[in-house]
Figure 1 (cartoon, rainbow, N blue to C red):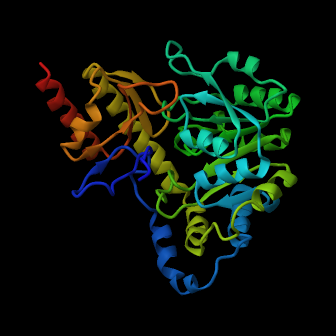
Figure 2: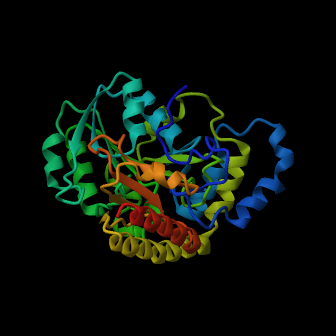
Length: 351
């Protein structure tokens, strides 16, 4: 049986658990999305539209992104594999630590993977040293912004400088912005509005986290190069976006107040979490996303919390990290408070 390495595995437990391992919006599905599932139920007996025309029209209305500059898939992970399979890079550069599916997809295609290790002394922030690693023998580079698992966000100015250096060296740059929507001012970090400057820039986003649509599966890539978009679109099977996902996506795009409410909730509860974790003497890295990354001397913390019905994400399998690093999602206040209470009980038993 394949070992599960990601968060969100609630299915391995025979009891109800509170899942802090998956960074999904604690507000849950917007009501409009729930309504969309039910209201279009008679359509589900037909094959979905492989061209996602209704969804593309909605993106143009709500986001001003042209249909020829976007490609959809069965979640962001599906789009990552589509990008790699379509472009077949031979050598790629990744940050470390970062989301593991980039490397999995790249190695599936036989790509050589290089790593730029983010410094713990620099609190895992991306710095100018990355430019030395962007050379002409590279084909592709992935950046997660904000980074997963640390939650550290890189200002768009540095991302665009990296895009420029990649362009000069004929390197495709994929910027994963799946958690960008949770930032208080995402425009300081997102490069979506700058996509026309660089044909080599692909931006990855998803409905998974911000709209709590993890089980529905809907992700997408944006790029101003229509040839690249066509290559990605023509990779793998044609019905990767179900009718359910398409209808839910259209409904979610109109949820502006929901997103604003989410930002407020995340900001308040993240600060509470950080303060309480620091009181418990954990080393906390101040995330800007909807999750918190911290270090503990307790190497069995995740296992101990399972006894309380709480799941957190051990980050020991991330390249560049070891045991003792953990990531927790920011949930609602009651759940967050319960987790802190569990951590206090565990800490008290150690003295």
